[in-house]
Amino acid sequence: MREKQEQNRNSRRDFLKNSAALTALLAMDPLSSYASINEQTNVTAQRKMHGIQIGAVSFIDEGVKPVLDFLQKEVNINTLFVTVFTYGRGLAGRQIPGQPMPDHGSQVSDATTYHGGNYAIANPNFYKRTVLKETRATEHGDFDILAEVIPEAKKRGMQVFASVEDQWRQDVPGITDLREFDLYGRRANTLCLFNPDVKEFWNALVADLCSSYPIDGVLFFNERNGPFLSALGASHFQSIDSSRATCFCDHHQRASIEHGIDFERVKEGYRKLDIFVRKALKDIRPSDGYYVEFQRLLLDYPEITAYDELFDFAKHQILKDVYATVKSINKKLLVGFHIEHVNSFNPLFRSTRSYEDLASMADFLKVVAYNNCAGERYANFIRNIGSTVFRDVPLELLMRVNNRLLNYSENEPSLDQLSMAGFSADTVFRETQRAVKGANGKCLILPGIDVNIPTGRNSRKATEQDTYEATLAAYKGGANGVILSRKYSEMYLANLRGAGRAIREGNRL
Image 1: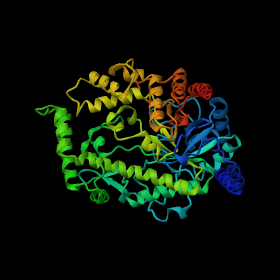
Image 2 (image 1 turned 30 degrees about the horizontal axis):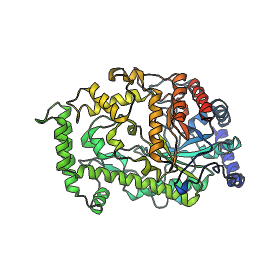
Image 3 (image 1 turned 90 degrees about the vertical axis):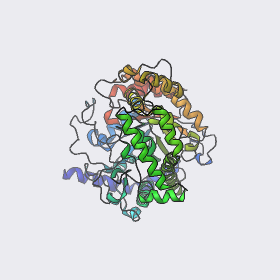
Image 4 (image 1 turned 180 degrees about the vertical axis):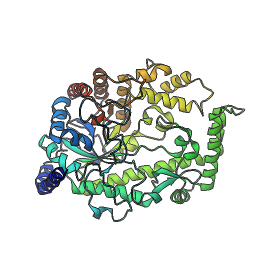
């Protein structure tokens, strides 16, 4: 252990010693093959970005050089989206508990040792204005993922982006007073987006990463629904508990007043929405039916949706701040945002998002186009909305109508077959086309491709051919590249090779 720690310290020293050389390398402008994003007009990528998401544990388990050699030679990867900050298991750690290990890396679960946090070495000078000062990931000692990976990646001509995700654990020092309040005053596990300490932390983190390391940019993950959709359970990843909708803290109250929203009416409306949802889950049908009662509630309390828009305002302000912070340090660095999977299959969510608007605050968008795991996720979403607002509609009919609204193929499987069948590669093509058209040339579109994203025991497991077809569909849809997702430590080598085959073909389109 001591020997390994000493190696890490030496590596860090070597990194700092060679930083001038790396800076000179960056001065050659590895992004010069891209049109000027800052002009926000007719963005065209002359070199496609073939990317993959990968966490620190993969480099610990398999070594930096062997992993990069495999990804470059077998998968044609030229861009690494390295997970630098998260406390979640989606982007970091080995395979999640309960799922079989892939055919590479350690075969021992890290469920008891995983911690999460910042996998780079933070410069404390950047964090003086936030209480979130101690966020170091502890499970890999003093291993610095950026110091270890960047030099080897640059030798191979690979770009390195720092991925940061809004996922937290509850024992982080200073976090208690930053947590959101739900409708009835209980603390939630998520952090308030209006809290000054939270906003300052994200700015400090990206400023630190962009100033301390010669990265090529940042990919920011913030998978958060507002209180309206959260109350309805209008997603794939949650059970329905309308009383837990957030946030109703003092910061939000002040923001409501500033935006001309009656905070007391907001709370009254959400309490009535909570009553509606709880009655629906108990099959207590309103005299005029579920949808009519729901629509009446929204007409009586327009503050419900206005407050949800306020949540989006706070979320997008953080994205704008992150973008501005990065560009203030180096205008050549690219900033991208992860667009949640619910965007693919929830028309209510889609109506609150405009690709053209999002493109105005980003250099690239990682649009989730996961097709294999979408089967069970979409089925969960349909069952969720079919248990409240659309409870009067048979689930199969509800799904077919929703398919039409989303421009899905009529050949997608029935609801009872969906989890086992997954979605076709055609949905990747359509989602990519929609994003490309919506962005209107203002930013790059990099669809996220499902490579062995974990699914339930009775759900579909993707084959190499599935991955090949999905990846190629993104390129045929006009993508500027792809991002293989969720993380390398979940992916099977055969599926990665299938993606690599498609990348080579897509690169010629």
